[in-house]
Image (cartoon, rainbow, N blue to C red; front, top):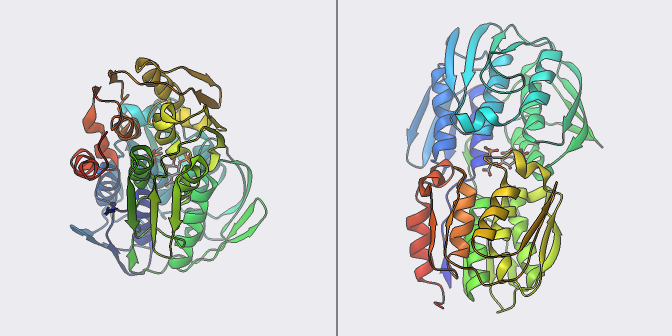
Length: 413
Ligand SMILES: O=C(O)C1=C[C@@H](OP(=O)(O)O)[C@@H](O)[C@H](O)C1
Ligand SMILES: C=C(OP(=O)(O)O)C(=O)O
């Protein structure tokens, strides 16, 4: 049996940085994720004048309930959508200040219009210097009164997360009616973490009522990243092996841990304990049809192992994977076809037939999840190469070393 320590959750780290920055007092984050996305978030906060002391597995953040320490700043959000969507929202609540935001070419292509429109409707002076609803943009802060919003979060739940976290920083709070929502479990992470920082959101059906009053600092231990864990769970199921991930069990916040239920439905033996999850291969890997709307960051993981299943694998309701680091439905299909596998796609689905993958160069499109997913397939398809293996830095800079060492402990074929 192999036990593997997975680095901290990107989503939890990003939220903790936002909440700690806005809180009254000092927050210590234990085992935060250290990767390009979260370092970029911390660097963004520093550009805004926040004080963050970073030691390897412990970050200390001095909260500033009144907002950034600098009246003006330029913030570069790199590739991180959490950074690019959460930080402009954080500064919007300040009483005054003028802030410019930009992001990488990849992130500039990704949308945020429903969020920027919501901020503008709350009276925020937000302007785009390029394409409407995309970075770069600027925010001139003058405080937010609050009020009612209607939000379409059918493209990204991050719009809702940003506005929920903004609520307590407004004078009167926010009432948000959500018309569409993808990646719903990420909103549960947000609500649970806001509660830990002292704010209780009232949820009635699709309406969220967020009280004013601000956040209270708290020490916070970041759980391991469940999307990252999916590569290790899938590798065990694919190769006849077994893996245990400590720190991710029944009480985990992240919906992506539900990926193990998909492996279970395919035939793997899965045990979700109080504080650890184990996946054990039974030698079977059945095909299936599965809706991944809630856990779509693990869609590429499943797509990459799908050719080895005994029947077709059809993944449905994942249209929003087309607006991630790349168009993930097309990228998965393109790479599987390069490996000689038969694949069909539609606007929001992909269907993969069983086959025997051939060596190929994987077109990564600068997407960490394409690399990490196909690395799992590579355990049974020797000869996969990557045009940009380093893009794993976004969430897991040590992925290649860790995954190779892990793979040496799996049954060899
Ligand atoms: O809120 C978050 O931390 C995230 C939400 C999800 O995005 P969408 O809501 O855009 O699907 C997920 O894909 C992303 O990796 C992280
Ligand atoms: C989509 C992702 O990231 P983000 O939207 O936070 O950039 C991801 O990590 O798969």
